[in-house]
Image 1 (cartoon, rainbow, N blue to C red):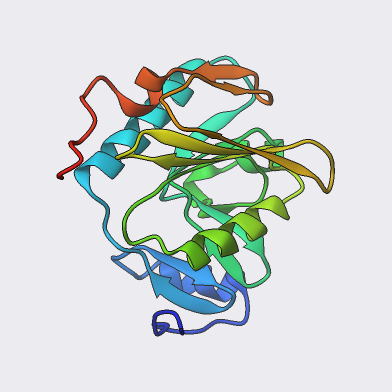
Image 2 (cartoon, helix red, strand yellow):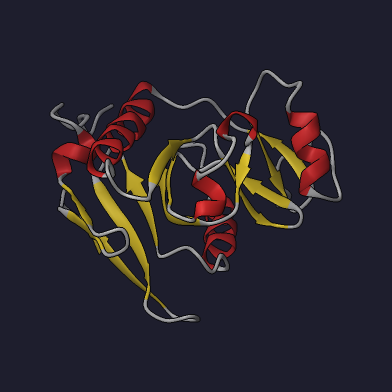
Length: 196
């Protein structure tokens, strides 16, 4: 089965970023194909905001900064991704003229809050691209309705360890060293009912 029809195509990230400046909607560049990003639910937005707020508070007085999904990650020459939340610690990303920056290249941690529009193939493509980034230490897929986490942690240059927390769990990041509680991630609202 083929994926969605691309809105446009680009041979490189730079041309895509120039094109993107004149757009009102959100787009990713998927191996040269421009794909529109589906709108999320209130629950999706709430969880992403919870994670960003917790990270911003916990990263104060460190060399790292957290950004939300408007900040693009360059994953390779023909792909740009928009993770829901990401932590950047590399001075090439977090210093300098941030007013002119539209994409970073050295994420340390990436959070993706999943939604019904995420397809398994799309998530696997992102996971492969993310794991190829040498700066990346942790990838967290957050399942908002079931309230579980799929955590992928780098253990060596070429090896990753994956753990699924099926119940709300405290997330311990190694680099940067910090802890996110279930309340930091999911907030204090009750989980959606199974009927929702």
